[in-house]
Image (tube, helix red, strand yellow):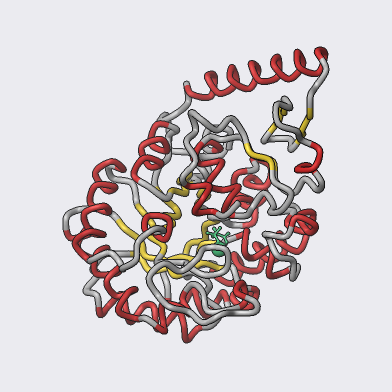
Amino acid sequence: LAPAEMAEMKPDLVAGIVTEQGSRTSHTAIIARSLGIPAVLAVPGVVARVQDGSMVAIDGDSGEVHIDPDDATRRAIEAHSKEVAKRKMELRAIAGTGPSATADGHRVELAANIGSVLELQAAVEEGAEGVGLLRTELLYFNRPTPPTVDEQAEVLTEMAEIMGGGRIIVRTFDYGADKPVPFVQLGHEENPALGIRGIRLARSHPEIVLDQLRAIATAATGGGRFGAMAPMVASVEEAEWFVAQLKEAGAIGVEAGVMVEVPSAILIADRLAERLDFLSIGTNDLTQYLHAADRQHGGLSDMQDPFSPTLFRAVDQICRGAADKAWVGVCGEAASYPAWALLAVGLGVTELSMGAQSLLEV
Ligand code: PEP
Ligand code: MG
């Protein structure tokens, strides 16, 4: 099930999703979560076991899947489902009571990952203090031609109005790997996750990224608070190129940042931070690349565990490198686990961005 197909699913028609491939951090799962559709990925052999007319009960939190559950299991699942709904209602009471901080008053910004205006509205209701990751590629999945500057500026301006004074970090197009590239012809790639994606694609088509940055500049002039962020940055040279584009686009007062999601960026975090306002750790890709394990591969989903010591050492090293130079956030799915979020804050992370449905729990 491709991310673009998932994005078309109607939450009122689709009660849940189970797939054999993928992992918690594949884009199909991320989009399902944002639509509020329970999903369990990487369940080997499930397709052969489900017949037409089977009842399937799934728990998107625990990853449990029951095929034709007996009465006792069904009752237990229904009771649990009610508890979850009750907990959500209770959490609702703290939405918007921020600014968010730890119990001892240490400020941590809680922001949302979004891919549409609708998701932003939902995020604001959940108390999002800003947007830590706008996945712009999700706005234009099905277009044959790139959006114009005006079109993009209009969407960003609308978002700034919805967000009030909160900052919106706009990630430039991150097509490639599992997100097909809609308006650029790329040759066949044997390993698209290691291929021309993210900022690599931007550098081969600078006019597309420049238009994105011009749109941000326009929306910022209108009073919105914005950051611009490049995906898949692996070198100082790429970061410098991005900063130069931002300047060329005339963006004033827009914070410049890059995602840290390629292992090489961990090792040069200090040098990146000297040139930027912020670094945002993309734990989804960072985990897959650190472990050399495809996040789409159902058989390797265990290797996407955000609690891996490898990942915490990476966060630690990034925070130490960036200290006193740039602020560090996290926008990968790891930020949505309360225990993980707590450890990341201890290591020096000051902004956590996640799917809106996790904000209140964190
Ligand atoms: C990431 O890689 O952690 C990330 C936030 O970006 P995406 O999931 O869109 O690749
Ligand atoms: Mg990524």
